[in-house]
Length: 304
Image 1 (cartoon, helix red, strand yellow):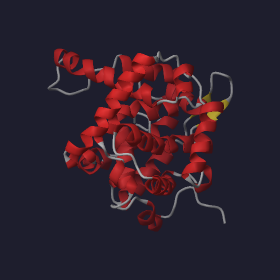
Image 2 (cartoon, helix red, strand yellow):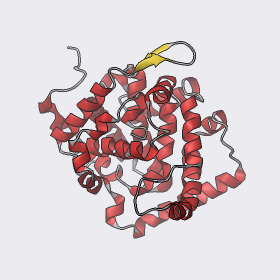
Image 3 (cartoon, helix red, strand yellow):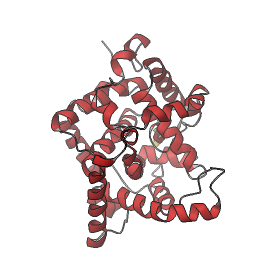
Image 4 (cartoon, rainbow, N blue to C red):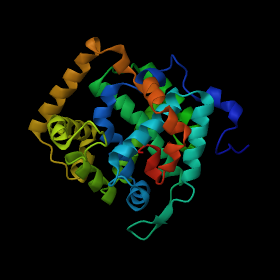
């Protein structure tokens, strides 16, 4: 029997992560936001995703709005009640149906190409697992295996079929390495993301003036760029033209070590900000804002 693209509503409770699951416990750690550009770069370096983001996305004009809508999606899939998660997933899938065009090499693309669509979902799992390994609470092998199994099931809610992703984490690692070696490239969208990491726009917060943003952003920009680049496989840093030498490696390893050590003193609320974030954004989700912004393949996970 052919697996339906979107599951029936009654299946949603079995697809969302349970409260004691690794997906629930690890996905909302605030430290992962420091490396949010990592998953984004993985996504937009896929030629189909990169073309869609460049041609249909408002990332350059509204990076902060897109970041909020990314979190809307990721946290809704993880922490929202099953009915809400299923609704958001269906919205995202629907909004991608009309996203199509021509890549720079002349090939046509569609946002719902199974390989590209599944890759976006997969990078979120890799970002959490790798992010915790270097910045937070490294998972045990059994936790990683369960995390991946649960995240594959979550993918069903947005129409990522089980057969579009590897079954086990070791198989995922082979799949990831093959994508890096054979598929990912320096797209225009990659260049745009790197530029935004170096010179991010001021967030649309009324209390934050230009001077305040200049002061607040100085160290944040340096740390975010360093963390994003440090998480990337060395071959992608080279492919993307990211300067990286012994000095950068030492700084990144020191930052990562300090981040891991902070686990013992971190307030519990910061180890999982997902549920509180959803409460803060409840009205936006009810308005369907996450779907209104999902205008490109990368919108599932890339900045909105």
